[in-house]
Image 1 (cartoon, each protein chain N blue to C red):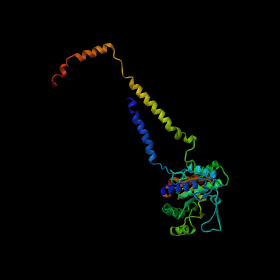
Image 2: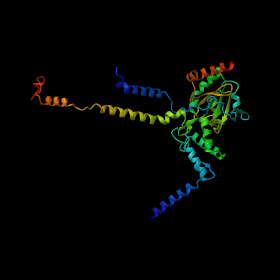
Image 3: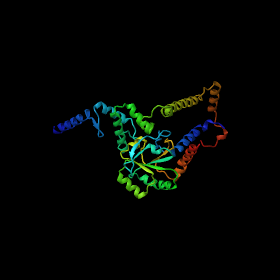
Image 4: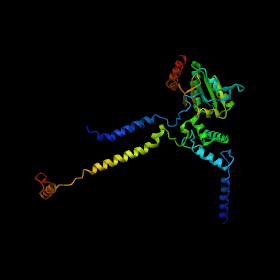
Length: 162
Length: 179
């Protein structure tokens, strides 16, 4: 019983911490909505040092610098788009965790799907072509086959055992 | 000679060629969007003359280098002898951006290794670095006489890199200037 109570208390402590917490990474936000907007934004931005982590996950010093920078820009009242433009102007498209859809990334976005369609098409074509090689036997062919099967083994293979 | 049986072999050879080419690429390199644009503005104190300011205006008037370095950066130690030699050859002015360092550590690092820089911008909190898209020291920028960023090299610069990447571009920029 004591353990159940203890467990409940720990759970409640956790619950109170998250809903109204307006300070994360040592940065302050004016309300939960701002904090959520910030969290969403930094999850979509890449850490340039640990390049397979977002700004929200990475421990690299540059990631902390960039988190502070994003916070600074947001506190100035700027929009998500302005934060993204700020970083893309300095670091290029690679800072976006999801590559933007541009002419230069068309192959990246659609290449796999196109390759899959081509591969499926070629596979189906090959299978169908192979299927064409089964033929119907004509009556003459069937008669000849029966004749061959009824014959004694030819002299060429005599002597190969009983 | 029928073509069709060789199709898989040819596809393999094509993919193999791309993969081979890929072995020589560095996936961690981030291309700079600053190439061809004016050098980002900044205004910070100079390392050895903190009462004086170092701004992007100092990078105008001639082809110059801006080398991002720090005392905590081991690769910067590796490339530093090259910059000392380059400074002695007097080919072009070399400016430094001391990135996220302390005055004491930076000065003692230079005292031990030599100072090839005409002037050093002291970027204590790294905000200038962010404006220049710095993500890992050392980085070296080549800026032309009009203050336009022409090339960025990430990683240590050595004689090989210099001859292959910097020297031809500098020659080209300078011959463009005099015309």
